[in-house]
Amino acid sequence: MKKTKEEAAETRQTIIQAALSVFGRKGFSDTRLEEIARVAGVTRGAIYWHFDNKVDLFQALMKDCTEKMVERFDDIMNSADSPLKRLKTLIYEFLTSIGKEQEFKEMENIFLSLNIPDNLKPIFKQRERHLEIMSQKLIHLLEEGVEQKEIAPHLDLKATAFGLMSYLSGIRKQSKMIPLDFPLEEKAETFISIICDGIGIRSANSVYQ
Image 1 (spheres, rainbow, N blue to C red):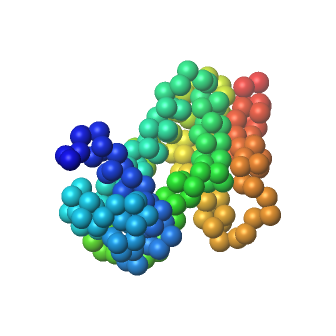
Image 2 (image 1 turned 180 degrees about the vertical axis):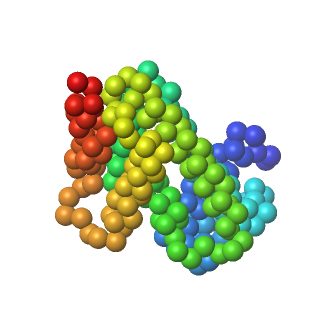
Image 3 (image 1 turned 90 degrees about the horizontal axis):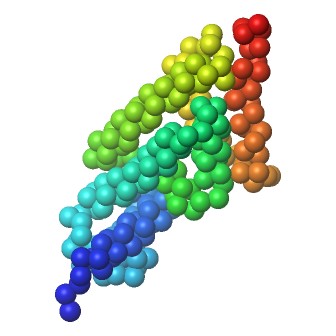
């Protein structure tokens, strides 16, 4: 019986989720489509119905993951909260996602891979462009914070945005390299304080006096 469009879309998404799990555990080079098919509960032929090859499937996976990341980022950035509140929410979402969400962990395993084949590098370049756009939006958020006197006006905002993203990236990488004796999400408020107390008005009261 011919599948409906909804059933086909559901099967495609099931394959992408299975690919995320397998690529996250084994990396691109060591992953076989047969294993993805087994995890997804479909035939190998079903994968080829939706994707040309393993690279095409990986590209679809990366697109799906990046779109979810950008959507979550934009939802927070476009909220009605104050700039500092939005910044704290961004940091909290990032840290709690690392600690709790299996999908996010598997995405991170892929993104932090040191063995990226040359034929996949253009795909990662697309993600880098999205990160550049997010960085620009973060700078605009910091500018709003300065205007509303929530963030110290003497800061170099471009450098601050870069430092913030580097700080969070460092936590992400260190959590992979060094076993933690505490759940990362339980310490989110501590990490938020380290950042926001450093750039916020409380650390620069004399500027406004």
